[in-house]
Length: 262
Image (tube, rainbow, N blue to C red):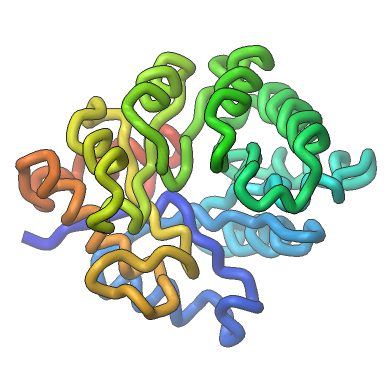
């Protein structure tokens, strides 16, 4: 039985894939990946513009636009105005990825917190779900989501890398959990435990391409086609088959992204 999957988080920027997204997406289609959320973030809004344009040109793509915590220092009033316009477009399904990253601290933590709060409010204004990046900042991430009323729109904790305690709280706040290639790593015991036990209607799979290629594709630039390996591992952890899990994942993504895909 053929399976169909949605990669709920991939980066297809030109500096990652110089030949453009077309061939990358077609390779994924061959592997049964039928739809994609392309995330546009960077030091400027050019990746957001490109993601929104790609979504407007293809029925199998939606976009998320935002300002990554690494680049939080770049957000000014003009950038927020443009982000609001981009986020209002029909093909843009979510605001993100936004959040906190205390591992690298490429932007000062107080700036990250202010920008995260500001963009949660923007998502609420636009009634769009939020794609959350969080690393080494679990408590502050949850506090801002709670304090800014993010449960009104909900969203996805992308590239889930926390523990069951964090997962329970995120679920309570209206956020789904998305598993990347990390769930295939032997060292990712906490992530695997959450993938095995989280409510099946609240989980997704993603590549975060070009990063975090799953086993057995380690060492290669990650592509949306590789989401098949991540989904297979999640099915294994849940003691089911990929054929049984895939239709549930598809419906989960459609519901969260507010889009029905062919």
